[in-house]
Image 1 (tube, helix red, strand yellow):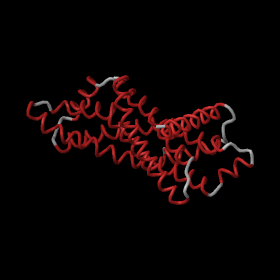
Image 2 (image 1 turned 90 degrees about the vertical axis):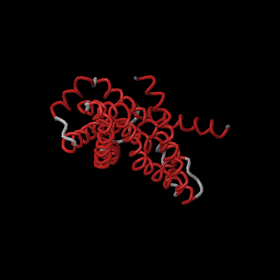
Image 3 (image 1 turned 120 degrees about the vertical axis):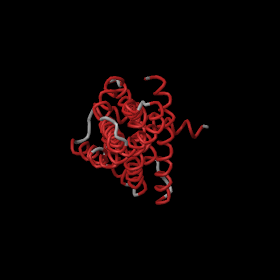
Image 4 (image 1 turned 30 degrees about the vertical axis):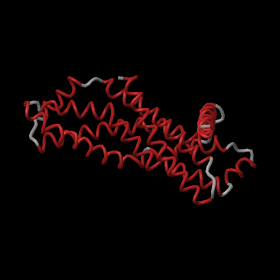
Length: 245
């Protein structure tokens, strides 16, 4: 219990310091661009493919039930609400954890065991400012954008399956979705993604920053980072859903 509280405290301190340096003495612009490019631009293909087939699966599953009640036109509503409120932000966050969060931990952890972080401190360069702040900013900015792309991809995937595979009228698909889906259903998912981005950056950087035990320690820290981030995302999703919706 004491170790858990100590870990939470250290992670909180790192995150608060990163926020401080974000507004006071921020790193060079190129550090932010590099992190946003890696987290955002290079992750877009993964998010699009995952969300496209997720939307298609939702349409595939709901059609068999809705067709019994002649309610095939409601498929678009289910796809839009499912992607906007839940699956868009959660799936995107889990994809980012697997691809980017693990890389954050491994990169910072390698710097820790190779004493590069100690070298930064010797040169009077704050390692949190240099390593954590750009990654935190990239997560807070990149996750909402990726989530929005995920929502659009999922809705399009549902449209493809519903209209091309099952012959649902495309005009009805879009019109029903527009009539029954509110903007806040999408915005609420964006709110979630901001919090998820905070979790990913804080947890990943914490485990990397406190890596020990050589190369085996890096692998162990990366595994713990991915598992912890994924669990916190799924747990916090419940509470965020209760609060937002």
